Length: 224
Image (cartoon, rainbow, N blue to C red; front, side):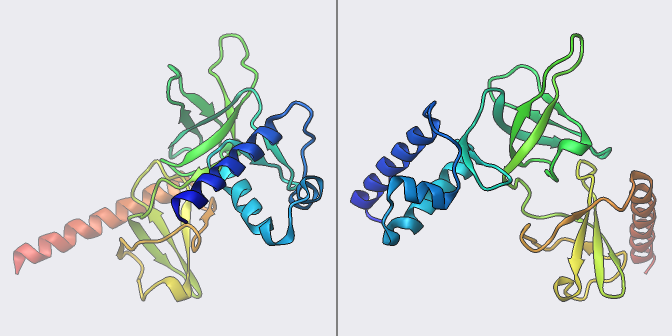
């Protein structure tokens, strides 16, 4: 995209953003917006790209029913800080206090992810709570941990205790890894997903055994 095309794209993007933020705008689906704005057929992909860009930047949100709408009052963009017990916090630039996010409201966010949150009503004397409404960008690009092999799949138990979920690895993506091997491959989040089937006590037990195994292996090397 040359400078002229980029300038046109950004002007269109700003116009679409202002349209969605208008007080009289009713949340619409993609096809409804195309019809209402009379977007030509050969321009609809560009229009969809604009909506996706605005969504990824956290400027607008897409509801579960596919309707685009402006970010409402009490909605913030921040960095998710995970905890091994399942809950987390979100740090928003310019705000003195982090938002507490209960486990049920994390939407699978990982430590370091950029997320969009909605602040809940704050009871007097309580910490400010929030719910993650969208993961905008994954903060982790690789995970190191202990690989546990099953018959047709495996799991990686992360060394980073701020990651409270174990990572499913399909058989075809295991690259021959075996149980108790240190896993340090690069995985994108399109090919793995989280499971909460392991408790903190399970993880602690496996990691403890893995560290003992590492220590014994190092001792064996020095005895040779």
